[in-house]
Image (cartoon, rainbow, N blue to C red):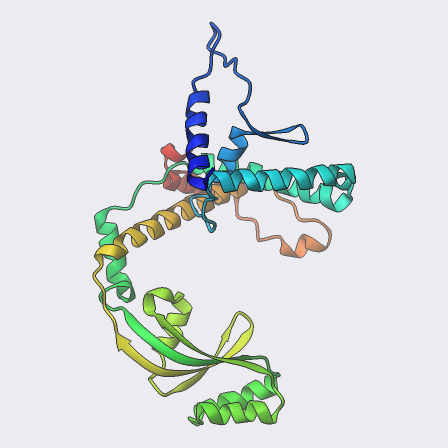
Length: 306
């Protein structure tokens, strides 16, 4: 049976089993539909559905959904491993118990927050237009960059020396000679990207360099020596970009609503820092200010999201 055939079978069976018998009170009488048994343990259609359509956290997903057959195969492998883990009593290991409790807390928190935030309003055409106006690098002002990059680590004194060399317009290769002379290990490569593929910080950094110039940046705790070799305009039609902008705005709106909801909870809660963590306690605002901020937050979220 091919993967596509198996997927169709699962889909049709799921649809048929959804039409379950009910008693006079409307309660379902059907037992959970079983997709497979692994050493006697059931894997239900509900588990397969969950594996296929695992809901993304607040509308953002980093992982593609697997096919139905692949999802079932994944669950079978997982069940085999779990059975071995239970037999070895690994579920009683303190570290595993703590991780399980942590995962349960996170799942409950995410589920409640998703429910509390609800469905955020879709961005309007005007909001999309405004976003594109303020981010021309996505369409009309899109540019293409080519640059040489060297990533390395150095002491404060060495960093100061390199900064002076950059300020004196020493060549990229000349600075590499300094790194070699001081036995500084580095990784060198050539990179190419369009402005719409870059983070806001990387775009800002590259836009500040003229072709042929060299600059030293600190990104994520690592030093990066960059020489911009070329840059040219590469505008595209904004039509295909609008869907991406709509998604971005929806995600930002959802994130803001979730943040506002959490801020509201914090404003109403009695949070006490103890022991060594007392230094982390923020200055507590007055009760009047807290209540005012809480009302503003609730109004910003909207009654439909409560």
